Image (cartoon, rainbow, N blue to C red; front, side):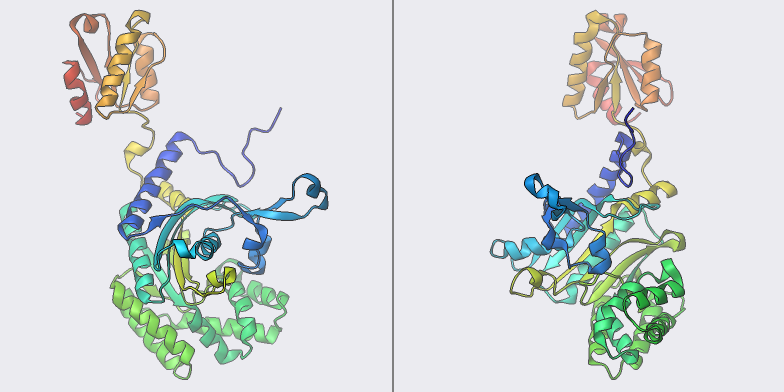
Length: 448
């Protein structure tokens, strides 16, 4: 007998799960579109050279490669790969369709991506990303709008205890340069430091050594990172914390032009957003190697971790063409959001299991035509209607309606058919009343 489980790290989505997913996605879409972002879709499969070399050494190992087909299969070589994220395909699209797109291109994209990773709680090998990106401007207005859009989405979903942690890649480089002059080692260091919460200080030191960084230098990197954590103030509000942290950074980086630019841009973002959800966190690293400026991450509670992140990647699009085009984006982790909302009971009750507004019964074979006509009339009024598919005992039909959590049942029995009326049963209260067919739709719509 064949194994009926989905492949490890992949999932089947049953109707109630899909309704919850669509509820979240529809809110995300509506907010993105309210900020002027347009939809974009790209293929699930990319040429392998499009993806390799864009995510750093570790990212390259997690790309799902597709072996050559036909005669080329015997070589064991791969020429295609499943999409790893939505940012690199966007960069390819912008480079390829530059003349067809506006100068300031704002897009959102909600599609699955694939990672050859070990599945864990809230993490899968196939999962959806909900990306929003702005192409063509270096202004911090871009970062500000991305942050405001993300805050609005989280608030509309019902989150209250979140923070948008904000840092700058140039600030990290400036701090590291105070200890380590060799800038070529900074990217490897940040990739390792991004895992500090997962693997601890010893794990970071070990990984840095594996990346051909001497132990003494690795310890200096970690020391510099610890200093960054210590810069985060412990004042009552994020606004007070941010002001103190930036003041400390100004003092620490007074001799670094790169650091000054980073602090100035962070100040501009705070000025343009004026939201209490932002927290300047100089220790935020984010491991992807293509970030060049601001970096952002959502934190929700101590036990949850990140629900998404992003940043500025001004050099990525230039990898696909001659022109360097500034860009900044943010990716929401749909799967993580769904897990947290489910655990916290944040979904509206009607999403739990409610595929229809009303069920229409079948009295006997001779009444099938009238039941189908009633169902079509109710659908014409905008209602979702489930027709019980066969003639059966009325009690059995009511029991099935309870099983699928339908709030109302329309009964067309012998007396109802004779009087051209319908008995409407409220499945929550058990109350029944006989109404004309014209009254039924309005009664159901009011949920009375």
